[in-house]
Amino acid sequence: MRKSVVTGVILAVFHLVFKFQEAAAFDPDANLTARAALLMDAATGRIIYQKEADLRLPPASTTKVMTAILALESGHKLNESLTVSKDATRMPASKLYLRPGQTVSIEELLYGIMLASANDASVVLAEGISGSVENFAEMMTRKAHEIGATNSNFTNPHGLTAPDHYSTVRDLAILFRYAMRNPLFREIVQTKFSSVKSTAVVRKKVVPRRISVRNHNRLLWDFDGALGGKTGYTLAARKCFVGAVQRNGVTLIIAILGARDQWGDTKRLLAYGFDHYEDLKAASQQSAKSSRAEALSGQRSERLSAVSSVLPPEFRAPPGDGFVLQVGSFRERDRAEILAQQMRAHGFDTLVEPVSVGQGEWSFRVRIGPYADLNAAQAVAQDVLSKAGYRPLILPWQVGRQAS
Image (cartoon, rainbow, N blue to C red):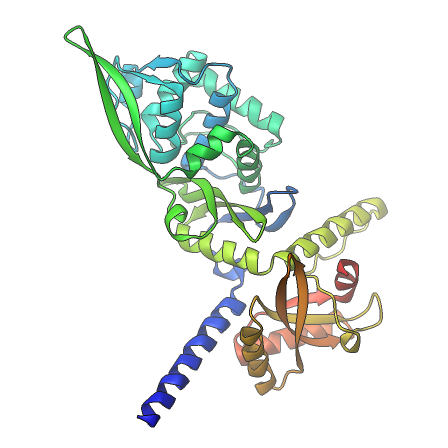
């Protein structure tokens, strides 16, 4: 009996260590399947992670975020009914399978577009608001540029692949952040299930119809704090997503384009963003300051992969000098201590550093170092990767000092 209990405890510890290693070792640049990805702090608009942020790619149905923005700001009343054309009914799926002559209100169309990604509803909306898909697409592009999404061009309201129809993860995040200011937009994208009401004339009688719709955004079911989003897929675009998630008072906007593993990428990158939020925020601030300094001086320097923290006195290098390696960051101290013990077993001088992240919350960061120069830190980082399987982040002391 005692032996089986001990065996069970050992297996549980190994399972936890494996999970901790998996969490700490996640490297977005190496592990994402998406061609482009971005995390934005919704409160400030600051980019805290980016991969090919300005690469123009087909956005698939994430296009419909811009379609919804334009409809909500068109000046048309939400209860205004629009008539379904034959052109709209010819659209391929996803669709509501509307019939020619049916009428649907703008608000109901928006639910069909944002939950079920209905292409036919998108065309009905475009034709009803601007007279044609072409006119509506031109309006979409103009409005997107006004909002700040200047690297996007739209040729249709649904996102089906077309020449010169493109966006970027940076632009999609900007558009989604803007859209979430609208109460109805927020309500729609948070809705899991709904029914789209329409009317049709059958034998001179007005017959009401209801079409049940389910939100394609899987995060609403299985990711805590999901506020809403928009999915997309075409063969050319692959899998796409833009959305927002809130945890511990922090809201992150995520945009993914060209992914093979849409939900895996989204969940891993969001978890990484929340676990390293304070680090990534400070690193992005330092990067912005460095960029401004470079612009003023006319000099360019290689951007470092850095995070921020407050180092304890016994761990500090002289101000402006030295680097430390961060192997992981955890909410629970026990998890950090297990990882630190692993690092020490491989011969690395390791410290668990508690740092307040506000509202009574703490982050426990596993650090190695310090090292006098970047080359030394990079050499040890490579050693950590080869011996322990972790890819540590390199922290310049100057960043940590400013964050304090």
